[in-house]
Image 1 (spheres, rainbow, N blue to C red):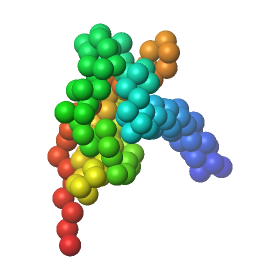
Image 2: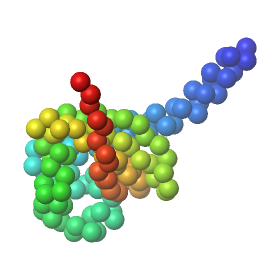
Image 3: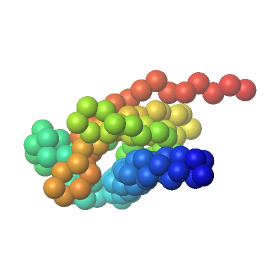
Length: 132
């Protein structure tokens, strides 16, 4: 009986986190799909109000992504890693393989707004080393 209660309590604690991770993957995935289609107006809608205020237009935002984050603009593959609470939001780590086959590990800062989860920043982390 204790095991059942423990499992139920554990599941209740994990369910909100899993739902948030699904939401993060949806937001980040849809933004990447918009980048792949060069639809910077749609990609801009997934950015937080702070990011939108910083870049002011989808064109400025698109220019920054193309120049600073080409692996996100044209990824070969995307793998979602762990998510965890961090400060007022969440940190979602993502592994991206670019068109040249190089791996890039990114940390997306996710914040909840009245319109849902938005991307408040992306940090390039050390890429994992691949052994033979």
